[in-house]
Length: 68
View 1 (cartoon, rainbow, N blue to C red):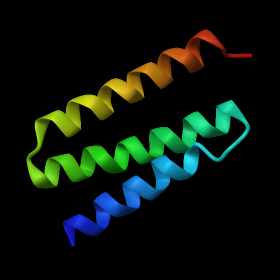
View 2 (view 1 turned 90 degrees about the vertical axis):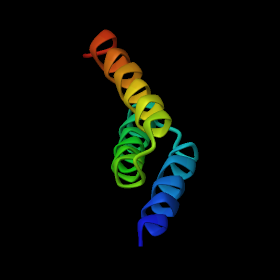
View 3 (view 1 turned 60 degrees about the horizontal axis):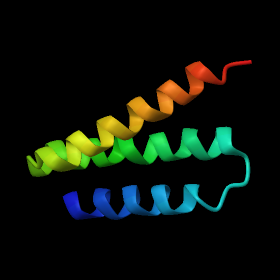
View 4 (view 1 turned 135 degrees about the vertical axis):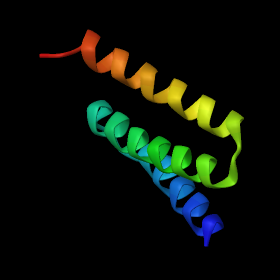
């Protein structure tokens, strides 16, 4: 069951790159990262948690820098 979450997270992240609108791409990619964080907690895999928190922080910085 945990692996299904990992595959869903993978599909969301990969699918996000098919989106032309950068804002939407980042939102969907952040959603995928949140799913990866949940997966990382369930698997107790700190590198997965760390990298996806880092990705969310980078997206958040971009949203703050580019707010309209």
